[in-house]
Length: 81
Image 1 (cartoon, one colour):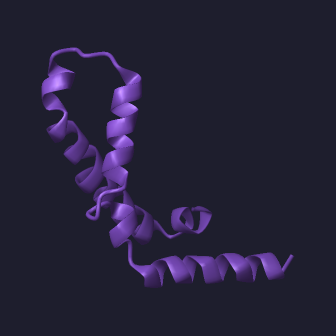
Image 2: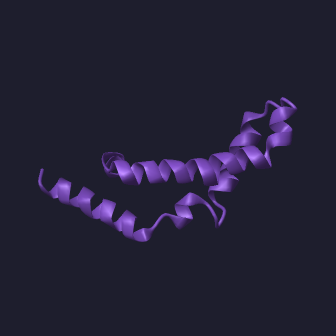
């Protein structure tokens, strides 16, 4: 994650995708409960985790090339220490 934060373009892309695919979807799918003032953190947490594990979740579409690149840079920085 540190490497993601160092690359401004990649970080901005990730944040935009996170908002679009995770936050907006969560708010849309649970709008009725939220607007009704339902206060059930455990249920909201479970619903959020369910959303993270869907096939359309950001963690499933995040380009593997970028993940490999970040890992490679991370291991390279570790080997220099």
